[in-house]
Image (cartoon, rainbow, N blue to C red; front, side, top):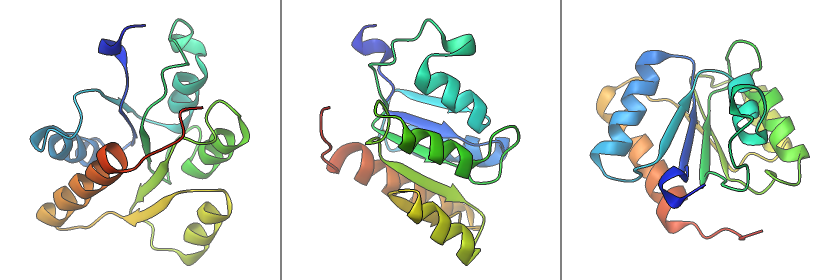
Length: 148
């Protein structure tokens, strides 16, 4: 797989409106040219591990960051995070929960499972765009991660 197919940001979000806002923010601020939007945790795991419709994908090409919603159909964010952290191929990919849940138990559980950041989606449009821009800037451009 060439660099043209390198995924910098994996957005896992079942809400079309939230996904479109996030994509718009990331593209508007040119934080990533290579974004993949998937609609549930099952699709994300298939993508990351090269299974199902992604069986031809080069899994050595890892995203720089995963933006993961918490409450999704098929496989929710917590189950997806467990699988990501349990596999040596994906355990070091930074994961940011980007969710509407302010529940303390969700925050605690995701941190116990190794999430790197937990951000509650702002309701206000401008604040949501700024939050996504800041996430993309930090995790996509500033953060240094191990190459292994």
